[in-house]
Image 1 (tube, rainbow, N blue to C red):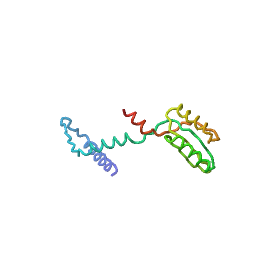
Image 2 (tube, helix red, strand yellow):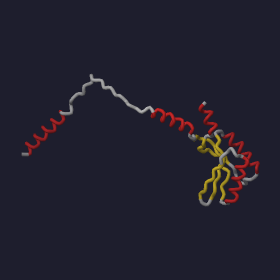
Image 3 (cartoon, rainbow, N blue to C red):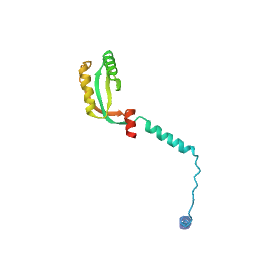
Image 4 (cartoon, rainbow, N blue to C red):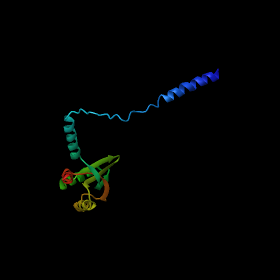
Length: 148
C-alpha cells in the first residue's frame, strides 16, 4: 500500500515539474505605450528647482564660544555676537545644567580663526574659544555661486 501511494505521489510531482518547462516565445517583440500627463514634467521640474534652492549642509567649522550654567552671561555673550556679527549664526543648546554656544558657519578654518580672534579681542568671553569641525549650513549666496 505504501509503495502504491509513493509511486502515485512521485508521478503527480513529476508531471507537475514537467508543466513548468514551457519555453517562452522569444520571437515576439512587445511594445509598451506610456500615457503620461504632461503636468508631471512640470511638477518634476518644479521639484528639482526646490531641491536646488533648499539648504545644503556640508562639512566645515564653527567656533565653540561658551559652556556655562549662567543664563544671564550666556545671553550677554549671545547679544554681543549678534550685534557685532549680524551675518553669522549663533547656535545655543542646553544640556542640563550647561548652556553651550557655537558661532558661525565657516567652510575654511582660516575664516573661523579670524572670527575667533575678533571675539577674543572683544573681551566678552572669558573662557577658551575653540574652532571645531562641524556640519554647517551653506549660505544662500554661496549656493547661487555654485550653481553658476
